[in-house]
Picture 1 (cartoon, helix red, strand yellow):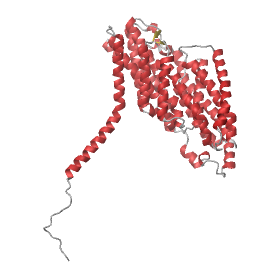
Picture 2 (cartoon, rainbow, N blue to C red):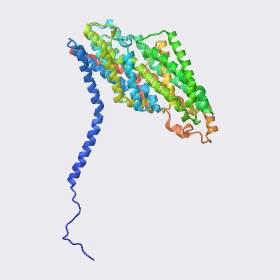
Picture 3 (cartoon, rainbow, N blue to C red):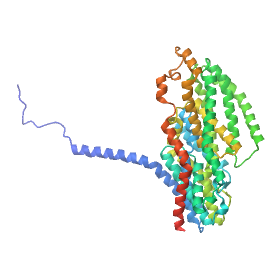
Picture 4 (spheres, one colour):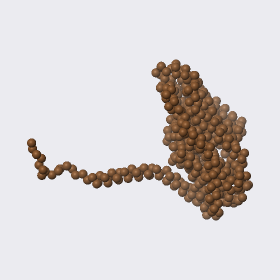
Length: 506
């Protein structure tokens, strides 16, 4: 046996282990850098926007005695607008995204465009300086105190909404501003400054609006299940009822847009609103009957097929809700800012003030930017994580939100669109739990059709599957309700503390 020549050198390739280790370290550093840069992109862009808001305001106000106050207030208004976009807009598009009628990117684009359009076109030229009239401006001792109250209210409400967004809780930005104004007003003047009757109405709305939204959404879902979903011929039932349902949505959203989205530029009486609603209903019904018939041609007799009939209405509802939200809730960001500018420039306290265009631009751009940077988290929460959505359920949520706002406005109740929309999502989920367990109609339908292959598996889930997914996630329900309850007192305490700190620099 031939022995290897011990004198032959090793001809295997040389490996530089130290170089490989260094290259591996560089790769890890690059990965970490990319990860950190992605994490820092959104805060960096938000800080850039706030800096630009300050620069933008300084250009318009010039060298005035109180220019510093106005610049700081503009940055605070921009910060509040970012948080409105991050938290509040999810209610308008979340159900449509959760039901797959809209992609997340499509929802962000539609919401940003229509939020901005609502703010700029229908946001109004005049805004109340004291949100919802909860404190009497005549009791504020001087202009400087009023400016501090508004700045404390703006900062406290923005901080609270920011914290709620971090924990994934959709809260009412209007209630946050109300709490901020109340807390700063009490710190400045005392408890006598607060209009407790108005505060009582706002507190009542915490219970009334989500319950009413949930009940109305559940009723519409019950109607759809009984008259369409659990019918032997689903397509024929859809052709009979879907045109009327979508026409009702068109009518309701027309009234909603007139009453809420355009209320700052046009205030028709109740008869005009009703005339518009009925007119839109019958025109839409005449158009929708042939449209639904054409869309339903060739569809299979299953729930999955029905969903395509609701996609377009959901996209339209998301756009209109965003427009009305931009027209209304931009005031939460720019209202206190406009009040600060007026008081700093004129030296007096007015119940209503005009909103300069540059102030409205800060609000509109801030809401859209906050939506793009931080909105997806809350959109997924509302649309996917509370309960499972499909187009029919999302349709019920959107229609319920508009109807509830109209009813509340007619009754003079100061409701929150956030509470209504999320309450409607809860209502849909809890109704599904009840209907799945107790409906004799569903049980009869399952017994009759379960042996046929034409019935999809997701239409007749097993009892074990029903128990497993419990339809409404209790952990999210608890967190959101807790956030709603403490929004006003938390914002009030924050505002009182911030006002006390600010007065140290007088």
